[in-house]
Amino acid sequence: MTSCAIQAQGLARRYGEVVAVDGLDLEIGEGEFFGLLGPNGSGKTTTIHMLATLVRPTAGSARVAGFDVGTDPVKARGQIGLVFQESALDRTLSVAENLRFAGMLYGLPKAEIERRAKALLDLFGIADKFHAPTAALSGGQRRALDIIRGVIHEPRVLFLDEPTIGLDIPVRRRIWRFIEGLRQRNRMTVLLTTHYLEEADACERVAFIRKGRLVTQGAPRSLVENLGRHTVEFESRDIDALLERARPTLGKGLKEGNTALFLHGHEDTAPLARLQDELGDLVTAMRVRRPNLNDVFLWVHAGADLPGGRP
Amino acid sequence: MSMARPILAVLQREVLKLGRQRTRLLASMVRPLIWLLVIGSGFGAVLGSAGGLSYQQFLAPGVLGMTMLFGAMLSALTMVYDKESGVMRMLVIAPFAHYWIVIVKTLSAVVAALLQALLLMVLLALLGYLRFTAIDVPVLLLGLLLVPFACAGIGMLAAAFTKTLDNFAALMNFVIFPVFFLSGSLYPITQLPPWLRVVAMANPYTYGVDLLKHALLTGVEGRFAPDFSVALDAAVLAGFTIVAVTIACVRFSGETAFDSVIRVLTGKKTG
Ligand SMILES: Nc1ncnc2c1ncn2[C@@H]1O[C@H](COP(=O)(O)OP(=O)(O)O)[C@@H](O)[C@H]1O
Ligand SMILES: [Mg+2]
Image: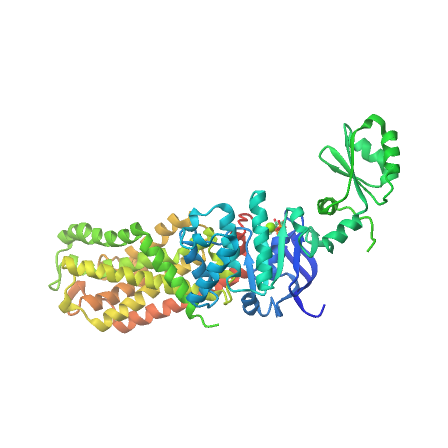
């Protein structure tokens, strides 16, 4: 890649005994829409904070928008927008006052801040809230305001830490469309983290991390395809027995609540029907479906080696 | 990037919030007036007058200082509030070195203290506690500059070592009140027992009150007179401010490096 917006080499961070991030290598291109995925506590927030110069890495290095985060943090911050997992707004101020405060911290003149603020509020469809008290906004509107706060200075690289967490589905969609709109407006590089994997389908590339280590990365489509042709779900009274009995045919499975998950690499589903007969009443239900990102996540979370390997 | 706009942003927010927190503003006016009227008449009856000055008149510099002390301290402690509420996130991600946050917050504490001091001076004048003929204007201007800075310095130092607002009451009891009581605000420090006098002389705020006495009580002789020279007062106040703000800057930048700011920001209470 010739122009990297974000580049990390062996990035690591320990907190005492806890290794929050463990030697992460990342290369994210200019203008790319990148998703950092992983279970809770896998080190997503710590990674973002290191890339945003707020947490000092204990090892490794990173460059963001051309600046080394360790030696040039102030210049790097000038090119960065960061929307924290939790709100950064002052709830005692109005929408306009919050954005004016945020914009002035970047040295923007008031008139320019007001112009941008109105355009951005309009993009989310809440232009009428310009003078509203922040405390009077709904959860989704407040989240949008937090994002607007993070892009008011038109950063080249935007970090979004769980931008849709805690919101209900229609609002999540709206936030997502908003981010898409921002990307088209400003052509910035976006790195986001999320738990909602169905959303991450919209990313151009995703990386799964687990215990601070990169497990796999790629376009969502190809990651899903690499998983195999089918995901097979069994319901059973005795999951452990089923996992054992199905293993010779389907390989190692995953226990997910009261279902067992397997990957089946071939288009041909005849072996699955035979297996179901063989297992008899150990199986109460069987479903065969196309894998999705959620499956990638589950396999990554389980720490299993990903099968496949087809490019 | 020039720091002018970021500084203005923080100052504007401070003034805006001060204007909205009517009770904070009211308390900052009522508190000194209570001391002046209630404590002043009580102690006045015991202490009498000296050098042609009633005890209440002697108290005027003390209560003016008190307004600046409380005003600057409460404003400086919004550092802690900002950490807890999350607004600090906007400041740490902004494109300037983190020690600027301490400097900018110090300036906004100074502005808050100054506004409250000016308001109180109007009230004191209206109530007849300011003797205009005894005011040394240049020294007063010096006092209105240096005292808020020193008080903000005390506040920033306290804020730099305070993690949560839960410690706030402790701070009031163990910082603000001792600083105020052991300062010569209420009694000439020459009247104190020797060990307390040493404590008072180690208290930078003592020199602030002393400077205000020079400013408001010119020509006073005897036990109500100032204890030190204007030059010493100014030197101590300026020196203390520089040292305190520097320590707070180092502490805050270091804190960022060691992530305890981030710990507050991410809501992680452990570790
Ligand atoms: N300031 C901190 N002090 C101690 N441990 C921390 C701190 N920040 C994060 N951790 C630990 O590092 C790991 C990764 O945390 P985090 O980056 O927040 O994960 P995620 O955002 O993926 O949920 C967790 O085990 C967490 O407890
Ligand atoms: Mg997180």
